[in-house]
Length: 275
Image (cartoon, rainbow, N blue to C red; front, top):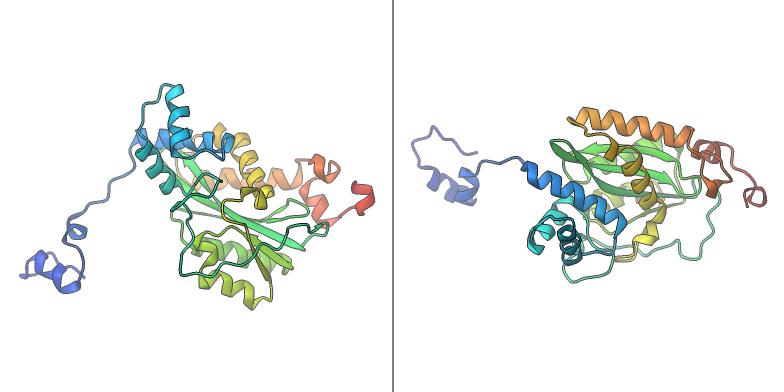
């Protein structure tokens, strides 16, 4: 829209379009190496202290000799898409204009594959940047049904992951997410409603409502992500793909009577035998 070769000054072009003049002159800068290292450490601390806000994380970082201010920690947490699990004013990432659905899984026994699917987004650090990962998991078997990597936190890659899971495995009875703007958007909820899937959303700040996906993120990061300094998005995508294949096919779970997620999904044990 802005033509830098036009005779009309950039200031007047910006005014005519109703955009900020600063946006015209702004040149995006890559995230600094210091911020990337700090975000990597904040991510690890968040896994160990999910209840920690910017103030507590700042204190934890200072105990490690990392001098950083609370506001900087808060800014990076916002950029990473993470927040303390306890409810706080202004920390929710939900869109105020989007409807929120009730949590349907409380006191519900889930033992059959495709009864409940869950989805979440997590931050994935790399050697020279970061990406976001969205995954769809079957609640009963812990199997990762589909996943997508993206450089932005919009709803597009979440929709692609859900569409792939439905195309390959059918429809669940209930689909559970948090209250993030990606999941409350009209496009996302519309897809689920069109498929006649019941929508369930975690309570605000209640990370345990989606505990199995949270445990998946912890396993993925400690067993794969933190062991490799991915230098490109393609390398991160390949590494995550290898891990999920191992996770589904070879990694036994004590909660599944030592079955792998693949075994629990495709050949579920009777409830009494599994117990």
